[in-house]
Length: 379
Image (cartoon, rainbow, N blue to C red):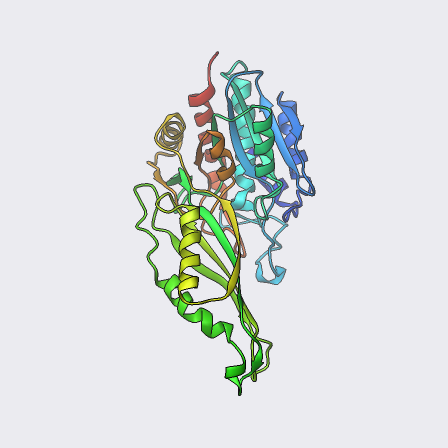
């Protein structure tokens, strides 16, 4: 087994699969799993590639979930080595996607092969779901596949997501939920005019400033036992023509909430609208909920992941709900237990992204240990 996960990770990282491109990654995985007896199903939508590989004929479905797409690498000159020419330096494999999450995809793929060879008559069904639309809009990826699964009455019982969850060492943190993400695109209406005649204009910047100050200072909630307090952040703010003597006619702002279960989507929207109304801000808002919060309480999956990390890595994982969002948000509403476990996340989305070579085979063994606990033996 030595080196197989590394070799597959390198092959995946050579493919420039910037969202929504897959660049042949899923074909490579499909060939490996198909040869091991998995049924391969394509659930593509638009430009997005989605692969579902399943072993077993009936019973509950357990899934490993990952993505083959990566974020853009940025200027190659900022990398110590080309982002799609994997290079090992100081015990680390450097490439775009090495940690997020082609190392996990390789480990999950080979763990599934190991497991079905050792347990051909396992309980239920086990499989791997991959998409090339996790880093982008996430409309035609796992969201689309989840709808297809619901339509045919095939809701997964559990799902292990390969996102890079670890903080300092492999397995020290697992994600047992994620916050919801609610975004708003705000347009504040004003009246354009000459700066020397403000009485004939209405400055949207001046109108919005007091409301923004209140929005930014507000303590939205205190969080709860499973989630930290809700956060509000403005990511883009634009107004003006570029001229110094023109009062702008409108202001546009993009903002985002990351929220748990202490505040709901509807209440956050209503509170924003109330603040804008109280300050007399003439506006329009387009809202977008990219995912609701989800949380997996202690149960079979969490127990399997924690005990696998203890057995293979000798660590006691911390369970948390931090970080951004993941595709687990589309699987959890189907009734599945969802837990994320993967490599150290310190370099994801950065120049010189990397994964520790020494972590790849142990990650494979963690996944095999999870499978043994959830699906070994006969029905």
